[in-house]
Image (cartoon, rainbow, N blue to C red; front, side):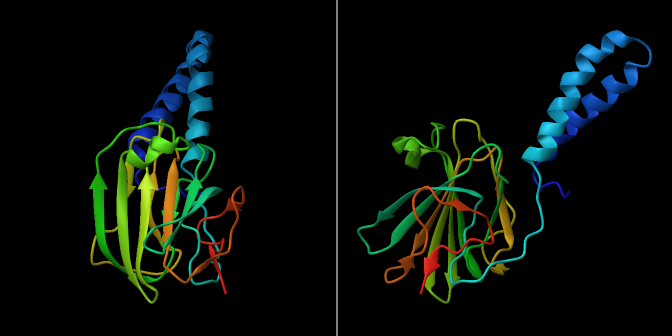
Length: 203
């Protein structure tokens, strides 16, 4: 299992603690009191920061995130926002919804209310814009109550393929994709999505 880039600051200390306390149990069984929870936490980190390979799906716009469609909202400018809620149990690596060129990656400071809260639009976030065959596509990675760090993998000017890994939200949160005017939504509220696989639009 591949571990996501950007997970080292969380994963490495946990793994080191698990290894050291496990080794010390050979000297004294009392260390098992520390080794057991440390190993459990290490296993949890392995699960949280897994980054599985994916067979990229087909469609003009594919999901950038694993999770559940939280809302589908019509925007005043004709676009449609598809918000995907990522729980701590989902894969946290996000992928490019379309092939194209990253035109901007903007970090916006904000709060850390739960991602399912209506006020989460004002949370800490990273706003992406892609120049694609459908025009400008906006995607927003939003931090939540647990996720306090968004790690972009690429910068403005980078050409990306559809489904390519572009960033990480540690411990999940929310990812919004804005479909251009005229593009019909192909998912429903409550539907599960898989990053790089699930199609968000329809013909």
